[in-house]
Amino acid sequence: MARPRRVLILDGYTDEPAGFGVPPYIDVYPRYIAGAFWHIDKSIEIHYLTVDQERVDVKEFVKKANTYDTVVVIAGAVVPGKYLGGEPIKLEELKQWFRLVDKPFKILVGAAARWGLGNEGGTVASLPKSVKENFDVIVTGDPEVYILDYARYGPEHAEPWRIVDDMNIVSEVAVKGARITRQHPNHGYNLIAEIETFRSCSRWISGGCSFCVTKLYGRPKQRSPRDIVREVEALYRAGVRHFRIGRQADILVYGSASLGQEEWPRPNPRALEQLFYGIRYVAPGLKTLHIDNMNAGTIVRYLDKSIEALKVIIKYHTPGDVAALGIETADPRVVKANNLKTLPEESLKAIEVINHYGNRPGYNGLPELLPGINFVLGLAGETAETYRLNEEFIKTIYERGLLLRRINVRKVLVLPGTTMARVGTKIIQKHRNLAKRFQRIVNEYSRRFLERLLPRGSMLSYVYVEHYDARLGVTFARQAGSYPIVVEMPCQVDAPAVIRVAIYGYSGRSIRGLPVPLNANTARVTTIAKLLGRSRAAVIASRRPFRSVEELYSVLKPEEYRYFSLSGFTC
Image (cartoon, rainbow, N blue to C red):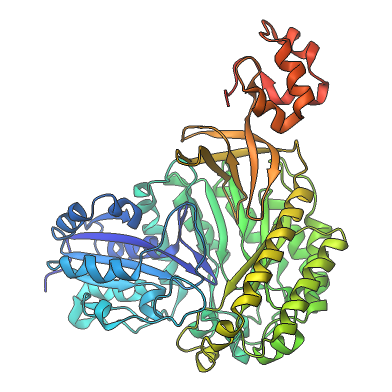
């Protein structure tokens, strides 16, 4: 087979324990794959498309795909959830579309190729034969390694199971593939590049958490601060302005000399300082710099060093950041049965520490850094008592006056190669009703935490409008970053637009807000009432029209000035 000349990368999106690629995020896969092709031959023509772009006209996609000599499909949501920015590729789409795409050499990569596909929790992930037979190669190793050999030697000499031996080659392809981001539909707006610092998990030594595939990458391999900074610089030059240092199991242990040698490596704040300072130096105009995963067990074992590391992150990042803590359960028996990271009292200590140092006002309306917590339902050893303990844990956090940015609950997705594969889904099936009740309780506490975080009248800045749902009469918008809070606005605001929002209402998963400033002469009275109450709205409406700012301010209270103008939004 001749070397590839025209390549199509179809991004079906990924959602893994240490990595995210649903818009507005772009994960490392498309960048590394493009970089691997261009590392071998910079003249290769590569086109990047998302699965949502192709859903618009499937017939046209099939026709177009058949004009390429190589099609690479990225797929795999192994931490399935609900998404606003896009919908990961479905099993049926992999079955149907790629039976019709029959001319190019077809390569499947990502978590779906490695572990299987499962678009919802409470199921067993697999990759059916009907999908496998649609592809020439299923890459069960590292895609960048396979693509390098495929582009250089052809498919006959490329081994799909090979993994990276040296992270230096990852850094090379990461830099060369950065420009593929220009083809992403969110480029120039709220596109967020997921950045990898190290691969696998420090707890691979002890077998890691029972349900998680991250430790199956083997001994952790780190990238140097210099290499990561070079990649960020390349992305910045390609027009990316939002970054998340998210592809690692625990940001606190990045750069640790004992990572890969000990289950609980000591944090290395100096390495974090080199990394974050370097990013700020090469990307001086960045708009978002956030993190993702953090291990509560590291905080309680190395409190002083962890605090030092937290201070470094807060010094260089942008506000509204979230440290996602995979506590998974508040039941000590489940912790032990599944080799989890922390006991409940340890998790609580970590939450207190992050609140103490991170709960400080940021310029975008949110605190600098807050914890988020994850629960996984259906793990080995789970009983009805587990759900009571989980509820008590959340209640304790709330009653202590602490803040959580998010509480994420999901049913376990059973993946091959994990110890949960021996347990299967029998526990979550047995506890279906308990899980539903727990989700309702979580939604109520999530609403309370949001209300504590953003009291009525609070302002959020740098909010990106995503889309308007005409059926609901609601515009959805979010800030760019880790686990951004969804804002629902009761009127049409066209994208693209970066706006400020005033908060007036809450639900378990979102907040309700108004685009500000509102036009004091044209905004509906009912809209003003959502923010200020009926009596104040009536007073303002009775004095309309306002002919000058001075006239407007004579009616408003000083704290209301920021909500109105004479040329703002009509909502």
